[in-house]
Image 1 (tube, rainbow, N blue to C red):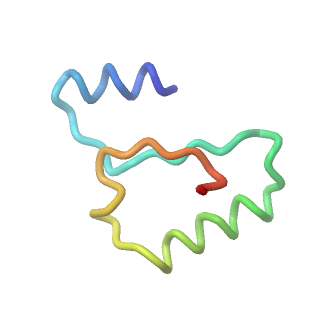
Image 2: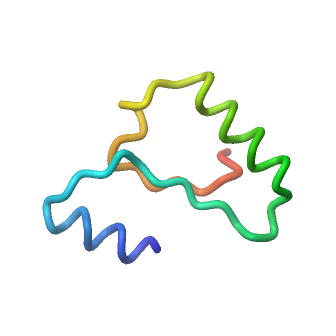
Length: 56
């Protein structure tokens, strides 16, 4: 996915942001991480960002 995202961005396209979540991460923790991000930030902060969760 990171290579595809980089190619997408290099083509001049914009993204609202992508969160990558490992399949090994517990679903409940993934939901909590996404909820925390949603509550503690604004959508514009994630534009064109590729972020692995859990976010450190």
